[in-house]
Length: 196
Length: 179
Image 1 (cartoon, rainbow over the protein chains, first blue to last red):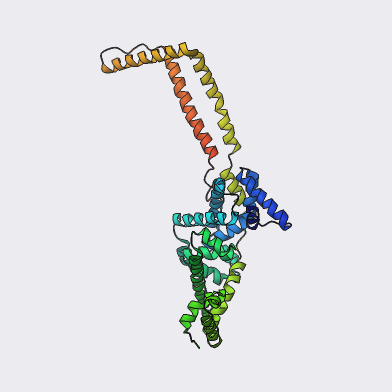
Image 2 (image 1 turned 180 degrees about the horizontal axis):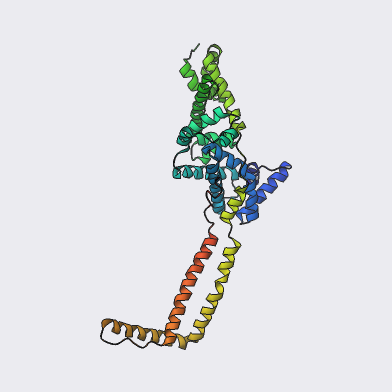
């Protein structure tokens, strides 16, 4: 039932039943054109979506733009959402497509930018809790970074990642394995090289 | 007992960590396990592989800016000013419509208008060919024509405003950019 799935997408405080009910109602109301309900959806999802965008682009301004674009696209496409299906994979599929299109429009690519122009002091401080992993992620090809972020950062199950990226489950698993192997190599190399 | 090279063990590591390898190929999974007990480099890689999902989940991102929600909402919601302007256009449109209806005054008026316009056009065509002087078009016909043009332009603009209100505007990209 979509209310349950929507509840997973929209973390709120309160008892699980209250959460599911509130989130389900919000999605229904937003789909019916209720702007206040949509605003609440944005409010509840913004941290997760912004974090996903930031980890993918590694730029605060670009993350803001992408997050905004994802939510505007969500609003424009709400009429296409089938309320009988889970909200979460549908939403992240839209988010993934928006991200891919955003990257296509964007020049220069973030990996080039991060290699040539290190993050500002502010940005670096924000990600300083695991800079080695952040750097390794930045070096990853976007085709590998997106499934990794959807699975481990946005916390989507494998099947939903596959659905979001229009891939089969085995293909997604293979891509995740390859991405993890690349990250693991980068992390091991960074560790051998010692602290920066 | 199967022995593995480091390169082979590292290729199998992700499946080994996920537990897939133990399900699909227990012998190879055991070979990976044995290799890890003897190879310190691969053991380090294994530790990285095991910790990676946890490190990914623990990855911290900056909090979204305060302006994010407002930015999204202003991108999709019609502004009150736009709505007022859209409704305000109804007044001149109604006045022009009332004037035209008064002039036409029913079917007779419409017939008179059509025949008048036709004769005006014929007169203009003859004048254009250079064989007759400029026809004397009644001032009220010119006034009516101007009213029609004004009404059509206003209605087209009105429709475009309403269409923009119906379709959310694109996000105000980069308005928030830091100086």
